[in-house]
Image (cartoon, rainbow, N blue to C red; front, side, top):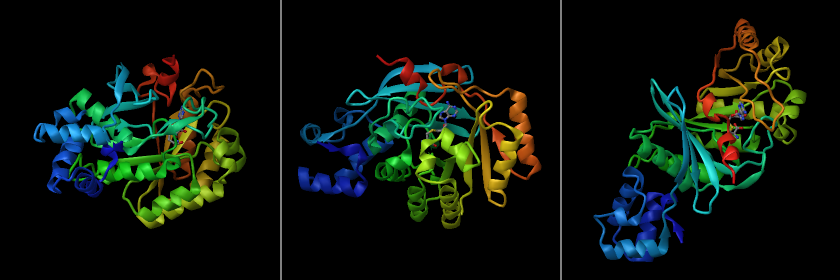
Length: 341
Ligand code: SAH
């Protein structure tokens, strides 16, 4: 069975011509159903003959997400738990902003990076998501909310650069003008720091935003929070981020989750400022969202402000990202764990 929603227009043309002996223009019709109308089944493709719809159903599968649960926060954030065709469960988040509608998607079921504060990685990696399964999160939420999603952040469960080929395929399909036609500038990919893949992504020269999960400004501290730091050193990762900026001209965003007593002191802020000095970048400070199984507490708001002031004095711009969806298991992988059978 071919995963039809993961096919590019060219692949769809070849599939329809070679496997189903159809004229090329049919591909445009099918692509339109899949990616513009975001249709959930071949039966809905009413401008195709019944015979063709049946043939499609025999040779291809239409991977969709099934909504298992949704939690709505007082601030309008909605967290979705979806199940996939094999029963795997993933989370996605809908965030209405004043500048548009944003969705945060998962790229893997589970994760194998082992970050000490994160819930997604507690049971390891189950599998990579296909491009169609990444798209289905956006399409499913767009249909559920009735709005056109115009921003996507790949910041949900999983490490997107550990699923590189499918990620690139997803990026190309979500920006296809014959489908949802999102602007690449409205896409963000967040990584824990797989340095070789950051360089590979830089070579693609896509005008998307790269977010690097830094969380510590020294090699020693970073290793304590993120096992991946032992594979790719802070120097290697920072080098890859500079290379990314050189190749794409896009300012890198650094994510820094503040954890009480671990990385939130003024000294930590000074070290961070030194690390980032002279770089064209932006820092997002995120008070950690405590996960039951993890020994991580949120710093008090005064400590967060002290940290930010210290950065500012040293000329580093930052934004405090506070609490959207805190009341709804906002942290990566929390909803899935709570509803685990
Ligand atoms: N694997 C990618 C993307 C998924 S995680 C990455 O590491 O960037 C998205 C962001 O949320 C990362 O910065 C991650 O470190 C952070 N994060 C995970 N769990 C968190 C928690 N409990 N509180 C605050 N931030 C968390």
